[in-house]
Length: 438
Image 1: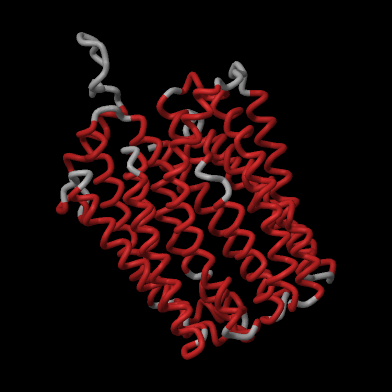
Image 2 (image 1 turned 90 degrees about the vertical axis):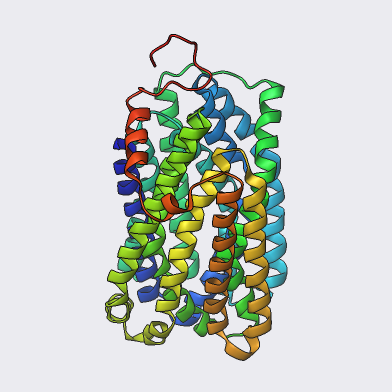
C-alpha cells in the first residue's frame, strides 16, 4: 500500500506537470508553433524509446526476480544502451534533414538541440526501472517527479523572460533530463549497494527479455505518436496545435493506468506462485476499471469549460475534440495494466500482437481519413485502435492467463485478502523450502 500511495503521488505530480507544461506551451506559443514543436517531439519520441529494445523493462523484471543482481543488471543495461543511442541519434538527424526541411527555422533549431534527448531519455528510463523494482518507494518518487518539476521551472523562466521559442522550450526539456540523470546517479552511488560488473550471460538475458518487449514498445509509441507524425501531411500546423491541446486531456485519465502498472508489474513479477500472481493481476485490472468509470463520469461534465479556462480562447476549437480523447485515454489506461500482467508472466508476445493490431488500425484510419476529416481522423483513430486492442487483450488474458472474467470487472474481496496475505508474507511461494512458514 505504501508503494501504491507513492506511485499515485509520483504519477499524479508527473501528469500534473505534463498538463501544466501543455498549458504553458499553449500560452507561450501560437497554435502554428505549438504544432511544429509537437511534430518534433513526436518523431523523436517515436525513435528513441523504440531503440531502447525493451532494456528498461528487463531491468525492472530481473531486479524484481533477483535483487542481489541489481547493480549488475543496471551496469549491463547501460552497456547495452550505448550502440542503440548512437543509432537513434543518427535516425533523428535523418529526420531533421528530410521531414523537417520545410519547417520554420525556429522549429529546426529546436530539433537540433533535441538530439541530446536520445542518451538522456534512455539512461533516465534505465534508472527509473532500477528504482521501480527497489524497496524504497520514496527514492522512486523523487526520481520520477524531478524532471517534470525542473521542466516547469525552466518553462516559467522562459515565459517570464519573454524569449519564448521552440528552441528555448526544448532546451528546458533537455536540461530537466540532465538534472535528473545527475540526481539518479548520486542516489545509486550513495545507496551503499555493492557494485557488480555484469557477466556476459546476464547481459544476454537482459537483451533476450527485451527483444519481444520492444515490439510491444514499438506499437505503444506508434499509438502515442503516429497521429502527430502523419497528420502534418494533411492539416496545417495551426490545426495540429489545436489537436495537441485536445489530446492533452487524455493525460488527466491516463494517470490511473500508469500508476497501477508501475506498482503492479514488479509486484506480480516478484510473486512466484502462479495462482497468487493471477489473483493479483485480477485485482490490478479490476481496480483500474472501477477508477476509470468514476473519473470519466466526473470529467465528462466539465471538460469543455475546463479547456477554455486552462488554454485560453485561442484554443476554443480544441473543445470539440477533447471528449474523444477522454474516452480513448480511459481505454489506453486499462490496456497498460493488462499489458503489465502479461509481462509479469513473461509473455510479452501476445501484447506485442495486440498493440500491433491497434497501431495498424490507427495508421489505416489516419492515412485513409486524414485528407477528408482532418484532425477528427486522429481522434477517431485513437478511439477505434484503443478499444479494439483492449478487447483482444482482455479476451487473451482470460484464455491465456486464466484470469476470471468476473473478477476482472469488479474488485474481489478474496483478491484483497490474498494480496494482504502476500504483503504480510503469510503465503509461501511455490519454490520456498518446505517447513519455512514464510
